[in-house]
Length: 199
Image 1 (cartoon, rainbow, N blue to C red):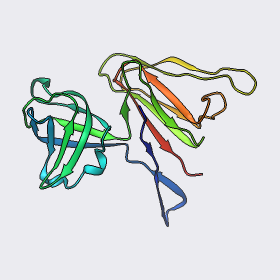
Image 2: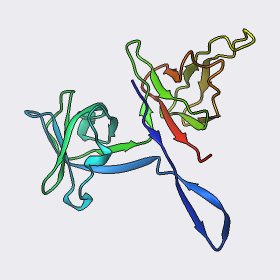
Image 3: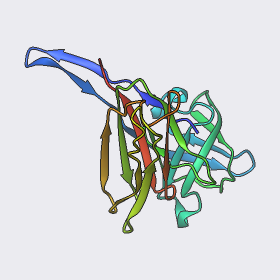
Image 4: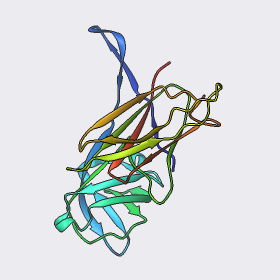
């Protein structure tokens, strides 16, 4: 499963002689309604058109729904805007009108043997976080032999609850046989974001 690659916006002003990368990693939206029959979530009318944040295949997390009925991770089938932004998902949805969607650069770790992968330009910052409330979770970045035959995998690296790790500038040599770098997490409480940095 591909991880979205976020390109920062560069901002300059009189007080900042150097360019500053501004990265919008997360957005929070309140669920205005959820419909079981169509597996659809609707955002509040005041949120406007948010379809660009919910392309097909995008995964997002919901928390805070009544009795936890809709708490979990969902995969977008499609999104559309009329009076509100409506999001059709793959997974089953419980009828309701509450809960909060977190969507942005972070993608929950893929499960079932899949990986979170991205195309490396050797100018990416990978951010890994553990969103579990209390338990430590692990992530892995497997390596391949570099030009000297050496390996340097990050294997089952543990993050405490709420902890983050920052992995800058993965070189293709030693991390991928082509241009794709694969990451895995212990479960969906591990989330990855990939920020493509200015050259």
